[in-house]
Amino acid sequence: MMWTGVFFSVAMLAATFFYLQRVGIHFGLTSVLLGLMLIFHGPAYLYYTRIWGPETEFFEQILSAAPGANVIGTLDVALGLTFLGVCVGVAMADLLCGVDKRHHKHAIDEWAASPVRMAPAMVARVKVLAVGGIAILLAFALIDNQLVNIYNYAVSDAGEFEKIGMRRDLGGSQIYLYNLLVASVFPFIAFCLLILKREGTRKIRWMLLAFVALLVVAKAATLSKAPLAVLLLQLLTVEYMRRSLKLTFMMIVKLLAFSVGLFVAMAFVANPTLDEALVVLTFLFYRVFMIVNEGLMEYFAAIPYVLPHTWGSQSSWVATLFQSDPQEATFWLVGEVHRGVSGSTTTVMFMGDAWADFAWAGVVLVPVVAGLFLRWLDIQLIIRRGKTVVTVAGLALGHYGIFIALSTALQTAMVTGGLLFVLPLVALISGGQPKRNPEPSQDAEPARTFLN
Image (cartoon, rainbow, N blue to C red):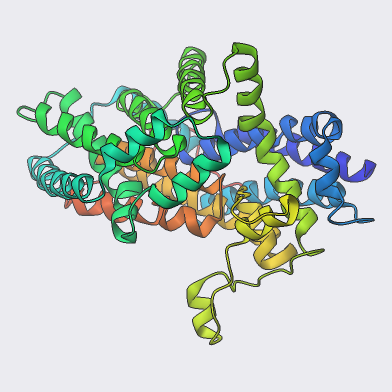
């Protein structure tokens, strides 16, 4: 396991260098993806697999599913390849689009110095979509008894597993399209409304308040703390991004403080027996930094030693192509392998699902696709279009897609996380609003691509 740990460490350091030198620290999608990967799966991964995990009984229970197999060594290599693959994808996007870090830096500097551009027709489209969204959100709030479900869940003294059952039975809606709208499209509209209000658009305050209030209820009605917490964080970042994409030290401190406060409060709601501050903070540290790496180890210990690689059979369209029924979701099956009971889930970052679906081919290719696609979105939103109401909202929606990608499969992030909808929504609402000139000043250094 020694050489695999060295390989992972070298890959992580290479990704860190690439992140700082090529990407930079800001609210662009590529920066957010690589930054969060380094936070959650960099040193935290080494700490879990070398220090925290071996001190726990469940760690050995996970490894017992694959006796004699070098689970941690395999995971070291896979996670190292994931870091490198994302960097390769980012470089490929720049090369294919003919831009380099100079273009990105110029666009981010210009973003901070420019006003938010908006056109009357765009404002009108946002208002029309907001009215339709309010009608849909209100209708489902009444049909699904969302306020009653939220109240019953919040005041319930049920334990953790009982609350998992409540989320499965009562959380969200039975209508997939509505859940998709709540996950991606409606937040995008809410971001647009917030920006319009903050930029001085008249007669929009009550529309904004009604829309956000109903959306908060819809998020809370999932009976999961993450969607609501992420929405509130998104609204905070939207307020900042309408001014600048640069991520300062003080902004990082504010985001961390806000995030910790949110998740501490929600940890009490989810587990009301946690009544001591130290216990809450330890639980929060485990849930945020350790469990994401523990889940990856669960996947690599279960697959392929207990569960075979699915080769895409979880996807309904793949199952239809081969005239078979879709396989039960891997996160259910892996949870059952290590806990011995059904109903417990293990969700992991996109690399875990890529491994489950396509073995080493998925580990190598999926991170490249993720890096390439997110960098392409950055180029289209930040460099090609510049700061407008819809590009700010598009970046915020992309952040949610990244959160989903770091929680489950990349294809889920594309659809449920809304990554595939970012540019269509931007184009729909912006209409014919002209793009900005993406080129830096003529006296700047000539453009170079990563491969030159």
